[in-house]
Each structure stands twice: as C-alpha cells, then as structure tokens.
Image (tube, rainbow, N blue to C red; front, side):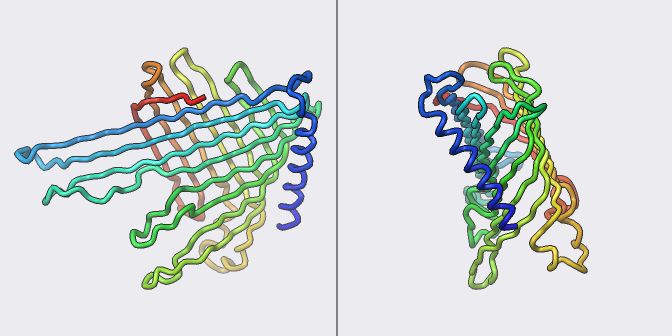
Length: 302
C-alpha cells in the first residue's frame, strides 16, 4: 500500500512540478492565468407562534450556508489544473412543545469536499490525470458529550485516464477511470465513561470511475452533477473481518451520486435543489438519500 501511494504521489509531483516550471510566463503561448469562481449563499427559515396560539405547533429556526469555489489554470499547452472546494454547514433550532424554551441547535448540514485534478494531454484518445480528494465534515456530533472534529476524514489519491466529451464556456461533461488509494481517518471513542478517544486509520486500494457534468439548461437554470463509483480490491482491515458476517462488505461498489439544480430568481436570490444518493455496504446495507430545497441569497465573491 505504501509503495502504491508513494508512486501516485511521485507521479503527481513530477507532472505538476514539470508543468509549473513551464508556466513561469503567463504571456507565453498556450498558457493562461487562474480562472476563479467563488459563490457563497445563505438560506434561513424561521417560524414562530404567540403564547396564545393553539394547535400544537412549535417554533423553529434553521439556516444553511454553502461555499462553492473553483480555480482552473492551463499551466502549459499539455497540462491543466482544476481545483474545486465545497463547504456546507447548517443548524436547526426548535422550541420545546411543553415549556416553549428553545432547545440546543442541532446540526442539519455538514460537508467538506476539496478535489484537485491535474489533466495532461498525451495525444491519445483520452488524457492522463492525477487527482487528490479530501472529504470530511466539520464535526461529528453523534455523541453529544464528545464532539469529534474533522472525523471521519477520507483522503483519495488516484491516477488514470480522463476523457472530456463536451466543453463550451463553463459547461462540460467529462469522465475518468483509474486506480485509487483511499485512507480513512476516524476518531473513535474508546471509553464512554471517560470519553477518551483514539485515531483509527483504514486503507484500501481499488479503482474509481468518476463522471462530472455542468450544464446550462437555460439562462437562469444550471445543473451540476457528479457520479463516483469505487471498487476496492484490497483492504487493510480484511483480516480482522474474516469469518464475520461483514467479511465481504468492503468488496461492494461504493456509490456517491450528487445532483444540484440552481435557478436564479434574480442576481442575488436563487433556488437550490440538491440530492445525494450514497451506498457504502460497510456503513449501511441500504442506500442513503438526502434532499435539500432552499431559497437564499447569493454572493459572488469572484
């Protein structure tokens, strides 16, 4: 595992350093500066009732903030680097139905997703790529007495072939297939009485197939989608699972399918509809579905 990971890192470092050395002068032919895009949106919903209200309803307040940022640069005629950062966090507060007091805020949305893909034109039917992706959350609040920050954290390093089927302005459709090494770092509570924790690491190697799309459906309507499939062929904890009911769960294909539709009502007001389907047999035998619909304010920082 260590040798495979070192090889992937070395390949990415050699290609990026080589491309960067060729990009000293942005005015040279075939090279461009950074193309950046940063969008911050905030959605909030509030419901309140007077003391004389009857019917059993309780007040609530919820908010969600999303940051979507991307940076892309053509380092050389044969090298392109694209980095995408997505951050989301939100909370919901509700009133106690008997006392009317406000309960402690509960986390409703939590996401950290940062991916960087370097694409190299090798004059074949498809291009060569190396990629690094970091996935985590700001806080694991499943145990109220012990909050664990940035857990779990997953780091994926991959390399393979990439094909861009469509590209026009900011719209694109591309897919990539390659080998991937994943490391998952989890903070585990070892003693519920003392609330002591320790960091556990699980490593697997396999193959990933990722398809990204961004399509302008109309002047005010934008679609963004990402389908990630991962098939592990080696797992560091496989010996510990041998003989158990979960012995082969790590061999199942992991699925992460995200879809976002954005409708601009005005320059600063937008409607977002987001769906995410997850399947990881090691976590749940069933698929997991998340849906978010919100109207909020948009701030274009770049």
